[in-house]
Length: 463
Image 1 (cartoon, one colour):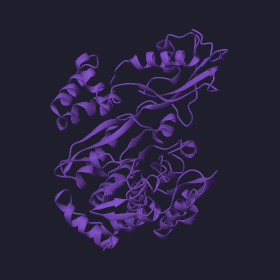
Image 2 (cartoon, one colour):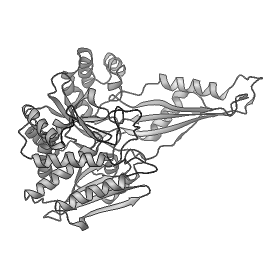
Image 3 (tube, helix red, strand yellow):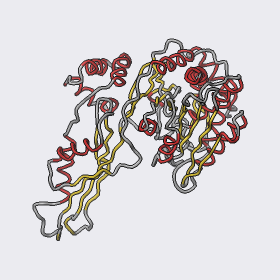
Image 4 (cartoon, helix red, strand yellow):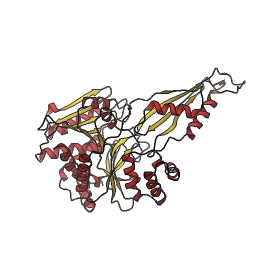
């Protein structure tokens, strides 16, 4: 028989007490979990029946009930989705606001593929199960519950605190761009997206926490080869599909220059101790010299690390021909790239063109929902606040910078010159991380210490 949410969370709090600081805000932790379950039950997936607006209404009602003025919580419809911006006015209007960022939409999930219905949240064996439990409805509700707890405790921020949730981060990212343009005067952004704490696979104790100050640029490039075609009974030396295949093999063999920035160097130096010896040695060697060929070969051979050492491009879709009995008149392919910060998309497109060695091939940038951004600065005040909050929640846990290989709404803020930092306080085992995948789940024991972290971090950066 399934225990109540309250009973499950209380047990998790007691079980996790040896791993983190003693939780003093159980009511806030309970509220975060309750809101997370309610939001997971809403199918906020792009397309017909998108319930992202209902998630926004759920969050708005919780904020108003907890003390936000109704006029300060605004939901704006956008196509089939919506976005939410809530403002907690500070005492000094001259200060730029602190933005706390998240998104309400999730990736599609089919019940037939899962061991349980992804939109019927469950708590089993100490885990919250359901689409969005990690990416990122629980993070959303942690932020909401933390702000309401601070209000209840009488905290008065000096600068405005703005809580914003986009509605299409997993698809077109249009609402994230709109929000960032509206909040382009912000001091900085704390992006709750993802799970940035790592638990030991055997003991379940915290290994380390990484905060993200940069992410690679997402890009799609369409390759096209055309040909007059003809009857399939009369093959010709030049065939559009053959030509495209050769181009793709040339691109597959091309290696972009490996490189580092301060954030990725921090990750390689600090995270090496938790890796197997050959990877650890390569991480340290690469951090010392990004031209070290042995280190490059070792890290490039591991899917978990190849994306961390530079730009990567890979073919993701192909299409060619128009009839079973005709020579192809057109063949196309999509090359998806994740570009190391500091490189414009146009430069990478030109590098792909040259790598293909085919003057007859055309290439065009068909990227949607992405913008090139540089890394956010490693500001001492931000670094200190992140470390302070994390060490209250998990005393002594190593905390260091990293760079994301994926994309988030942070890029929109960075494009306006607003520094953004990924700071999700959720800890999880790598083997339990199923963001965008089957049977997504997050340990309930991560909720209470995450709350303790936010209740320190937010005041540190809004006083």
